[in-house]
Image (cartoon, rainbow, N blue to C red):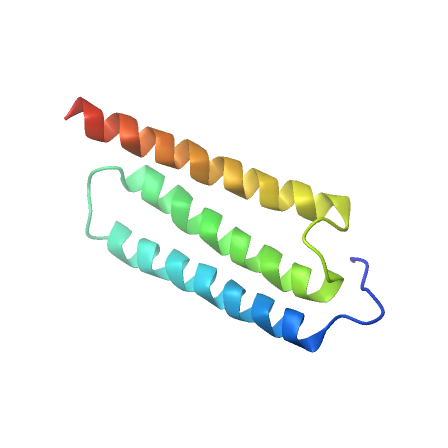
Length: 98
């Protein structure tokens, strides 16, 4: 499925698993509070999914040994960051209009 480096540092892999847990936890918290908030619910759902997908990318990174290799992992992470940026811009615009 993906390229594994012969000798991935166990500390690097552990750090990525911990980071993945952080992103997945953020996704769960956002998803939980989405049920309570009516404003911007769609953006919150998209953010929760985005953080979950970003968390899974860290699990893949733990196995490949780098966030830029293979190339599609770099694209995957870049798309997640673009999504977060778009959501941030939408949030700022929404706050300014009120």
